[in-house]
Length: 187
Length: 122
Image 1 (cartoon, chains in turn orange, red):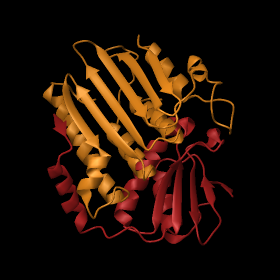
Image 2 (cartoon, one colour; image 1 turned 90 degrees about the horizontal axis):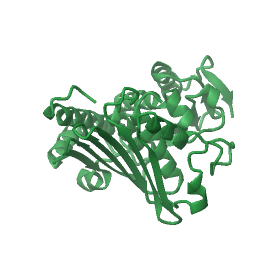
Image 3 (tube, helix red, strand yellow; image 1 turned 60 degrees about the vertical axis):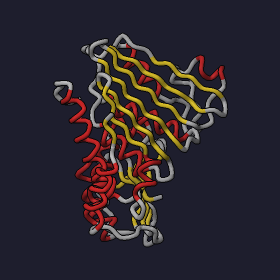
């Protein structure tokens, strides 16, 4: 994957497959501490402990179409080559939390990429699922909660591509503003 | 804290109000973008973004877009499946943003199957 936002898209799709109806996405960038953290949490069916022990093994998968699952293994590899790590916490019936850490300035850290495209792709492709996206850059936060948006939108719908298209623009400019406040040139 | 504010939402609303009508009618065409790990790595997100833009300009109420998982044909990802009432489901292979635009304009809107990009009939 060329962008971390693509890993995010991938892991969130896992959460949806696991039966979650609300997914929390957190991106925390702290350049002073040289840390980059991604947390993805769902309220799906979770996993038993013995599954968790070999979660990074690509041959451990719950899918039935094939015997290989690469999503988490790829994210683990991406984190580990940036002096970070992947941690997965899950409990049957209580959902799953995936946390990937990176060294922010590591030369092998892929750029975050287009988070607006990731979030809107998730929204348009998964009607009926809610997303809470929070992004911190050096302590300043941007957040978006589709549950709140749905409540505010009244007659408009989040499955409407026109709405989602404008939403993408709005996320893109908010993130740009968030980054520029810190004197950072884009994600 | 920066937040997607109610003002932002209102702006979105204003922009869309004139372009939109209710989309709750029956769907006659379903476009599925396969978004497994393989699809995402191969560029399914760009395909979805292009599709979203085309949908926004076409303003058709009877088209549904869905994200699905891998269907087991990873080597031909990004795959897109189009199901309509008038013909059997068609799977397109090796899609990108431009191919998606063409398939949307010709197949989804006009019903002309783009055999050049097709992988299979289902």
